[in-house]
Structure formats: structure tokens, C-alpha cells
Image (cartoon, rainbow, N blue to C red; front, top):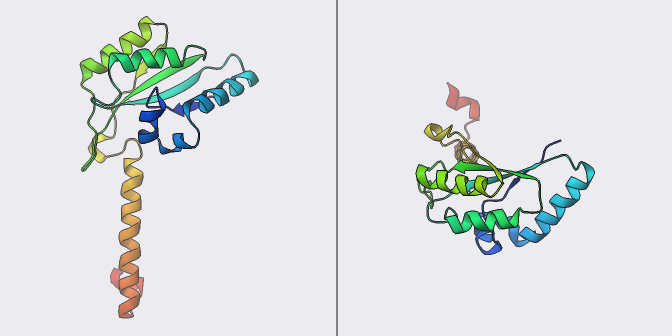
Length: 159
């Protein structure tokens, strides 16, 4: 079974912001768990997901830190161009910066691929679609509550 890890940063301070679970399980613990996982199947390679955020985690220094961080782990890094959505606090790294980042990883011997962007037309990347579903669910709950207050059943709105 293959393991994929959402990494998105090569140091704890930034990963705390991007992946709040990092405050409970910092990178050192995460990598220790990855090494324990690999003990079960040493031929495996762990895939690390890394969303590319313009000016946040996409510099060549970030790439060097990532290479150093993953030096002891058989790894593949999936670089994911960020799909912007309304009110997103981040933007996607420019394509040339993603290419430079990937080239540095590969030059240092770290297998890396850039994921093809899909779903940006429907906000379907990195949990954005789930956010839309949660928002829609909240609207449905509010509508049902209003209907209960007025004595209407949910079926009444279908007629």
C-alpha cells in the first residue's frame, strides 16, 4: 500500500500555518512515522504532496530545505499548483517558479512531478469542493429550520 503525506512546507513554523495538525505532530514526528512505515516495506517510496503557493513556500531555498528534509527517506514529491478560489488567502506560484523548484529537486536526486491542474474551473482542488459542500449543507440546514419555524415540511418546498 502506498503512503501519501500532505507536507506543503519544509519547516514547522510554516507548516503550522498551512497544516494546523502540525502543531500536534510536527515534521520530526511525521518523518519518524514515515521511517517506521518504511520498515514494513523497505521497497516502498513515500509520496509527499506539496502545494505551490506564490511567495509562501516556493523559493529555491524552500526547495533546498525540502531536499535536506527528505534526504533519508525514499520519496517522491508531487508539486501541486494551487487552484485559487474566491477569498483564498493564497495564489498559485508562477509556472516558471514551479519548474525551477522541480528542477532543483530533481538535480539533487529527489524524484518530483508537477501535477496537472484539474478542477480549477469548479473550485475542486485541495478541499475547496468539500468547502462548497459544507457551505451548501449549512444553507440546507438553515432552510429546514426556517420551514420548521413556519410549519412547512421540507417536501412543501418541492411543490
